[in-house]
Image 1 (spheres, rainbow, N blue to C red):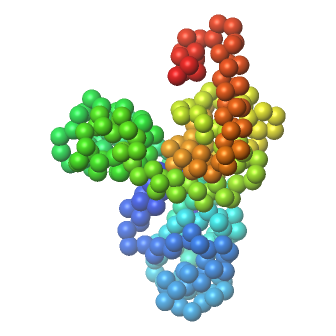
Image 2: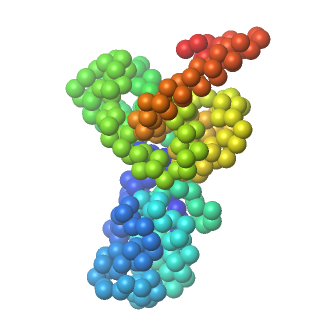
Length: 289
């Protein structure tokens, strides 16, 4: 059993589906408890089993089963012990789950955005014709190298030049759909993490981790951890950033009052950093931008 985690739009469902062709696939987005999930698996198997134990026995009676449980965010913690018992009952059962929530236990594969080279290859393939090659790396980075956003942009390249997409991000991707992808995850956050996410959404690019810790203030590190565990915060050893779907959803979720407060907090933070004696030129240029 493996859990594939990652941010919205990174391609978890597509990857698992391609790796397990012919698998039984259960969309668990609306399933909130293990009983509901067991019933859904039972229906896919063509049985009327309701109890999870009965579903496990039905799986054990099959020669081999690949089972995909997609979008398991709502029940990932509750489901894993039962799913593990199914695997123990059925040695020929393979289970793959997708979730934005990182489980505390088990085998986890975390998907990150594509590399620049991979993103450019995807744009080129989806465009299906002559494109301005020199602009593709910039377009890929403008879309955070996220596969779903790149697919949108690649299709747009069949109609519009890359320069037009770079000049107007609204043309490059379906921003409403990208924001909708992350909206459900925001609703499941605690109030503190939602507030921190709203503040961070005002940063267009990545932020040094040390600056982010100062920006969120006392106690904010726990909220950053909650965002990271929910795949809503992309991090490297020294920087963090919100990917496009999360940033769009977070901004749209702000009330006018919260948005005004977040802007003031952001302006004060940037002004304080600019006032630091002799900041490195790269840091000053980034802040002024």
